[in-house]
Image (cartoon, each protein chain N blue to C red):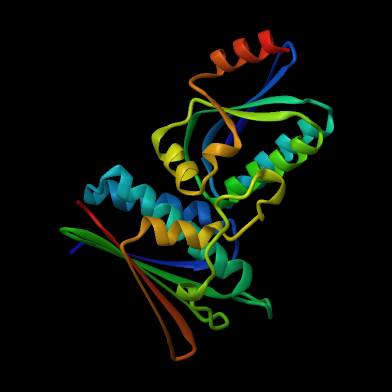
Length: 114
Length: 137
């Protein structure tokens, strides 16, 4: 798994590539919590190159979302592939996150909003 | 009938190797993508659970996985010598609470129930034997 970080004005983006499986979920957790600890309040996870997420990955999303809620920020998900969307749907996770079609549309909308 | 037989150690690093092997097996046997995703997710969850909770005494253990591709289904059998655990008895996950109340965990067995068509568990000769069947439409 690879994780790249970008910053667009007030929006921090983590672009993830590969499978978010049990073995690698911890890497995403480290990267996400580092952003939150640094004080970022608008984070977009770009999943365009992610075709697999297990419950270990969902756990990371939930841990991040709880922390962000406490910090009055939000985590958004962009460019979900069908398999990932299915997993979020069967676990009721779709309702917990704001979803965007692409990283670009997320950045544009979130930059305008703030 | 194409089959795959793998021995995994009780180490979470093995999950990536497991998924790579399943993916290759799916390619070799022409498994549709949605069935592949269902099998990968279910095996990831089941084996992760065994590694995390099956061996409270520690030590190196072997988890054996067999995959069998039949014309209209794919069957996975997981065998381990961990403590008795019947995944069919695990409680349902909470899927509706808001973020602040949503419990972390319990989703693994939900995936397995949701993505698989038939599940069988038996304890035999000191081993857990968990069989998961995915039908291919």
